[in-house]
Length: 266
Image (cartoon, rainbow, N blue to C red; front, side, top):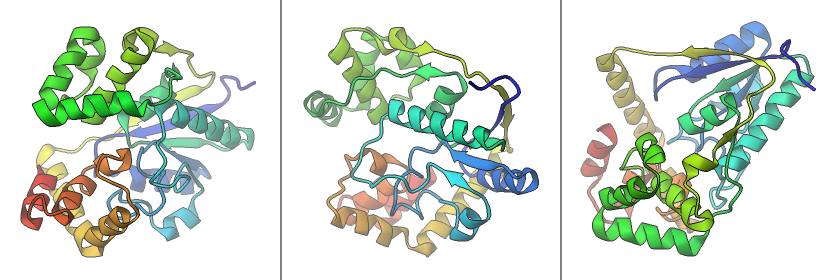
């Protein structure tokens, strides 16, 4: 059993703020190991659009939960939480410091607050029904349905995030219980230090623009084409991220490259 002598440092913040760079610097300084809390870094073959650490960085510092699944696989929050808890325990068992670097806010919060996610597996039939509703009437109609059955969860989710809204409605339909009523917490039995990174908005947006330029220069279009060629459609959860969805729409002839890049910068 772990005790309060064990610790975890969490490095959190928005896209392009510098979480990975700081995480690697801290890990090298303290002999720590990084546990990724990014929902797309888990996938192999998705390197450019996720700004995945380089092979040199991965060699310099031990990383966990990077390149552990194929894009065809669908990881639930419960799967991530279990694997992250296992990785953290392994690192602490070696008397080293784990650094949780995120990433995806919900994934990091699940670990830090000890969520016990609903165990219900995704149901393709129910999911397709809600995805069709969003396609026909727009994301706002889907979100409005969630507001009716679970206003607490609806407040936590961006109406444009169709995947998360769909999952919340799916859980409700499968169980008859709002997700907010199912979420239980079992606080971690170790000390936690949270480091939140911030930048002035103009500087952060400039960094995001530079990152998008670098992704395109490094071959993001080819990376997305390779995923589409494997049969991984835009409805797959890994493809819902910024960059993959827009470039995928361009490659499928749904918009021009200029329009896709402009959408990525918004």
